[in-house]
Amino acid sequence: MKLKIVLHLFSKNMKKTNTNFKKLVVVQVLPSLISGGVEKGTLEVANYLSRNGHDSIVISNGGRLVDQLRNGGSTHIKWSIGKKSIFTFFYIIKLVALIKKKNIDIIHARSRLPAWIVFIALKLIDKRIRPHFITTVHGFNSVGLYSSIMTKGDRVIVVSNSIRKFIRKNYNVDQSKVVLNYRGLEPKEYKRDRLLTRGWLKSWEKEFPGLDKKIILSIPSRITRRKGHEDFLELLIRLKKDKLNVHGLIIGDAKNKKNRYQSELEQKIIDYGLQEFVTFTGFRPDVKNIIAVSSVVYSLSLEPESFGRTVIESIKLKTPVIGYDHGGVGEQLKLLFPEGLVESRNIRELYKRTKKIIKNKPLIKETNLFQLDDMLKNTMNVYINLTHSKS
Image 1: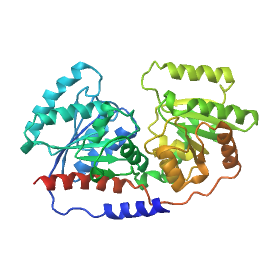
Image 2: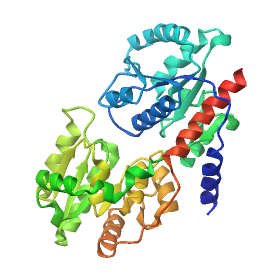
Image 3: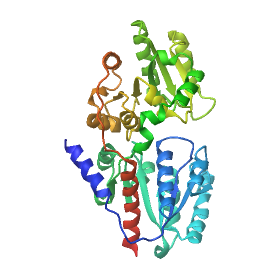
Image 4: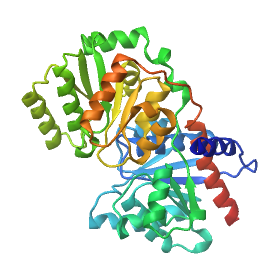
């Protein structure tokens, strides 16, 4: 209840915008624009800036989202600014030149190495023309000097209360600089009838024949060792023994095409006799549609997640979601769908909770929390308030 009140006030306050318009030049910096929550948030902020008459620039090593970024009106600069190499520090000189040329107001760093590059570059610029430095702490990074850079911004945005507690515990941060800004979703994009159209369902059935007759269990996440895919397979083994008509979808791709961990998972599937019960879909632009058509969705990261986007997406689409009770995932589930909470790595409880939901699908209530518009307005307010304090 306490968190609901905080979120209500947060949502209400975000609707207060500054009427004194000043065109801003904002640069966001991150390693790449391939896929993921950080990348998606960067894109959303960039598009919002452009729509509202500001100059939006994103620096990254590129990726499949660059076209979307440019189509939204932003400029992309392709630098390998997140590559762990001594040569990456040459971008400090290039960044100093860019800042002086573009009269940049805000530089928003979303990852550690790019943040260090920005931090050092800003030290080389006269204070009178130096942009404001903003960081967003997107994850539970290892504690130490390297990660501490994410707490050095003029404002430090955190994407969940769990992250706020984490940095308060581990770093000496002026709490007045910390801004809680939950990620948000665009409600119009999460309407089942708009996603599960006759055309999409026909295409889905053609690509994955027979799944319409199955109980679909989905785990949407990049394929890495920390995302809980092996726990998902253990769950499927137990459900298979019960002769339940389930099929597991592993939605997402690996960071590299030749991924050893994915090969290990594929071998485990063979060893467990799950070949007919599991499908790797690879990267999918229609993840929302797949979540909508699923019976249960899972968020099983072995380490705490900073937020819980899969949780929010599933709740918006009225699809039951089960996740481990830690970090942002636990935070969101406690608030929106406590029926989906499971103790981390407790496969027996994961199995029992899945069977219960399959047998009797629970009612999922509508929520106005975690709106994209709130997240964007809050980010914009941070930018505006900093630049006004400078002028």
